[in-house]
Length: 137
Image 1 (cartoon, rainbow, N blue to C red):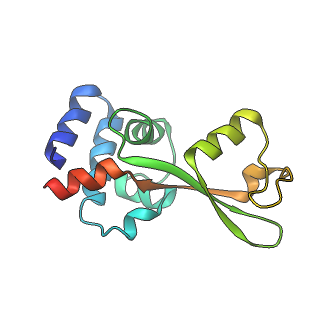
Image 2: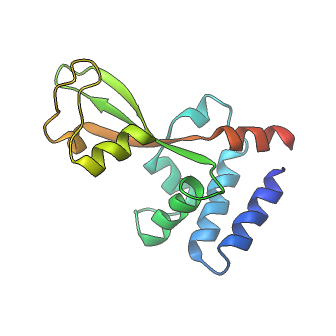
Image 3: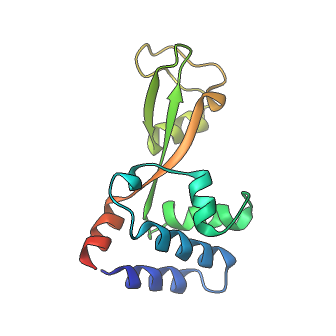
């Protein structure tokens, strides 16, 4: 699959949405980045890539298209900073479980972290699918 086919898949799946255009802008932004840059795509970075200056419904829909659909070019992740300023990487499954259950155990001690949402920084990284599609171009 090529990047163009990936973009066509988005246009077919979500026609006539502003979020579709934002998704395409994000993919165009990601396409020339090196693998290291694709490992941490922050919300502010993706906002700039989409041409937005604030998080709104269209931007969140674009993220859902790119991360939560069959398109799957982004993987959700987060960094947890604990009381001792130590950082831990959380994958999307760990983050989803914590949000669903309302608690997050410390990755080392297992002790539940109070107010964990205030101690995480969400970000995205390119999925393996995106890297493969980009290599095929």
